[in-house]
Length: 449
Image (tube, rainbow, N blue to C red):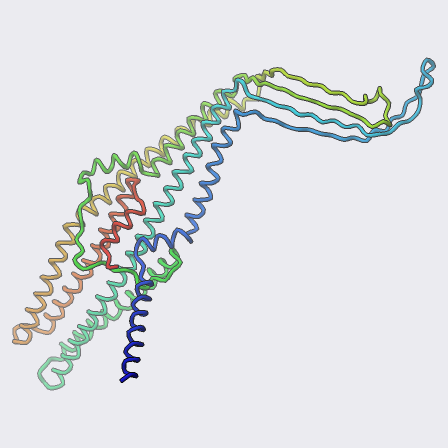
C-alpha cells in the first residue's frame, strides 16, 4: 500500500514537472520579440549606429565652443661663432638645449557657416534616431511574420495529414469492397490517385514547415517548438479608425521611411546654406601665451635665457579665390536637394500604397475569415450528406472524395485568411509608423498561452 502511494506521489511530481517544463518551453509573440532583440544583428547594428549618430550633435556644438591647443618643442642647438676685429672675444663654440611652450585659444565670434554646420549635424542625430526606430519596427514585423508563418505551416501540414488519412481510409474501403465483389476497380484507382497527390502535398508541407522553423530560429535564436497557437473562437476586428484617409495622414507624419526622406531633405537644405555662407568672412577671438627658454650653454644672442609673451586679438578671414570649388559645391548641393525632394515624393507614394494595401487586408480579412468559417461548416455538412448518400447507394466514392477535398481546401483557405489578417495588422501599424512592441502583446490575446 505504501509503495502504491509512493509511486502515485512520484507520478504526480513527474506530471507537475512535465507541465511546468511545457509551460516554460512555450513562447508567444512578445517572448519571440524579446529573444530576437538580443540576437538580431540588424537591430544591434542599428543600436550602435544610434550611438554614433548622437555624437553628431556633440560635434556640432563643439564648432561654436573655444578651441584650445598646446604646442611644445625642444631642440638641440650647436652654436659656432667667430669674432671680428671689433669683437674678438665673441668667437667660440657653444651647445645646449632650447625649449618653447605655447598655449593658444580661438573662440568663434562671427561664423555663419559653423552655425549652419551645427544645425546640419543636429539633423543627422535626429536622422539616426529615426533609423533606429525604423530598425525596431522592421524587427517587430519580421518576428510577427516568422511566428505566424510557422503557425500557418503547422496548420497546413496538419490539414494535409488529416486529408491523407481520410483518403487512405477511402482507398482501403474501396479496395475491400472490390475484393468482395461489391466495388469497382475504377474506385480503387481513383482513390489511389488521390492518395498519391495528397502524399506529394504532404512532402511539400513538411519542407515548408522545416524552412519556416529555420527562419524563425535564425531570427530569434530559439527553436520553433511549442509556439502558442491561435486560440479557438478567434474573431478578427476591423481597423480602428475605420477610415483609410486617416491612416494615410498618420503615415505621412509618422512613417519612418517618410521621416528619413524628410530628414535627408532638411540636411540637403542645410548643405546649400552652408556653401552659400562659405564665402562669408569669419571673425575669431585669438589669444596665446608663449614661453621660451634655454640651457646655460648657449649664448644670449642666440637664445635668451627665458622669455614670455601673451597675445590677444581678433582674426578676420575672408576667402578671395578657391579655384571655383565653392560654386561647384553649391551646384552639387542644389542637385542633391532636388534628388532628396524626389525621393521624399516616392516615399510618400509608397507609404500611401502600403497603408491602403494593409488597411484593405485587415478590413476585408474580417468578412473573409467569417465567410470561410461558414464555408468550412457548409463543406463539413455536405461531406456528411455525401457520405450518407454513398452508404445508401445514391452517391459514389468519387463524390465522397470530392466532398472531402472541399472540406480540407476550405480549412486551408481559412488558415491562410487568418494569417493574412494578423500580418495585415502588423503591416498597417508599420506603414503608419506606429508599430510597437505593444502591438505584439495585443496580438497575444488571439493566442492560446
